[in-house]
Length: 104
Image (tube, rainbow, N blue to C red; front, side, top):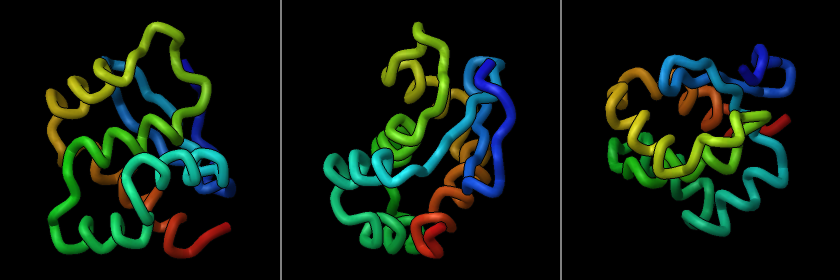
């Protein structure tokens, strides 16, 4: 529903409830995520150590959402990520972490 990801912008996709949704790690999105979950580099370190909490991943995805369906709530996103399994969300998380570390 939200279209294709643009890799030049560092965008990623995640499947939620049968839909492919786009995540865009814009400056504003990353600032909002950082305000909620703390410093992004600390989050990256936790992810590298296997200590990233599900809530942190969902918060990052939520703040990086682009053109998502109006009815999709954050709670529904969390439930969908949990139901789909963390392994299914890892490719999108990897792209977002790459953008945080490398910048664009």
